[in-house]
Length: 151
Image 1 (cartoon, rainbow, N blue to C red):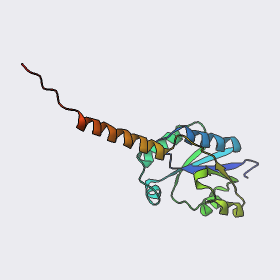
Image 2 (cartoon, rainbow, N blue to C red; image 1 turned 90 degrees about the horizontal axis):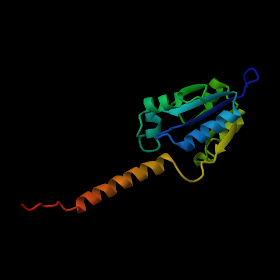
Image 3 (cartoon, rainbow, N blue to C red; image 1 turned 120 degrees about the vertical axis):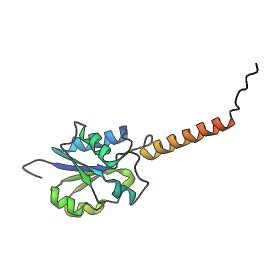
Image 4 (cartoon, rainbow, N blue to C red; image 1 turned 180 degrees about the vertical axis):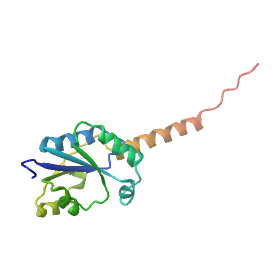
């Protein structure tokens, strides 16, 4: 706590920004007097999953355009130990797909909230839907026979 203000940090890749991203950021905002949002760099993301479709600088600008965060910063590591010390955060909010991964922050005095994404939209699901739709269009184009007009 800084001058009786609760500092909350949330972070993510925020690739193909969608309503579950927004819901998590809004939830973090509801807990915070000061909300800091970290956006994972392309290099960080590539270390544990496929490269984002939207480049880091654009993802950062999307999050900066929101009214919700007070501060938007790059996230270079999944280990938040140093970040806790630098930002004096009181709480950390992350999607429940990371459940248990950040429990070590509790030992540093940071309350961890695993936000329930639930079912529905996710960047991974969007990526798969776009890919599958594209593959189906290609398949249909290959099956289509050219029409020959007789004179």
